Length: 148
Image (cartoon, rainbow, N blue to C red; front, side, top):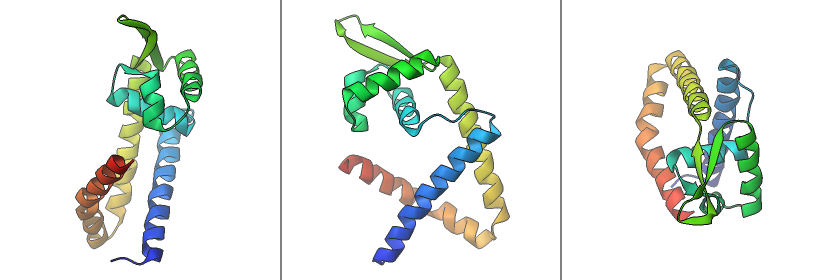
């Protein structure tokens, strides 16, 4: 079993890696950075088109009025489309717009390029160790999501 220091270091490394890749990919794509809460909502809606605002709030672990504000801001920015559920007009269904889809694809392309360049600069043994860990990290993420 890993020591508490190793576990803490893993958490810090994963967080810093995420933030650094996000900032650099946004800059490289010549985009204006969105707040993390907006990004999380866009990712959720892209993964589950038609999700309700109420369900999005539950899944993100935030208050419905917070999601309402995020939806309004993203709709005003042309990144999210909201529509009333025809079966229940009280329910709002969410979908990303083509502009959001393009923006997200650009970001992912730049993030992948940054990772490819950084991995290529590593010693082969370090690169292999990182890439070998990907399936285990994927299982860790799946377990954390399920526990959530």
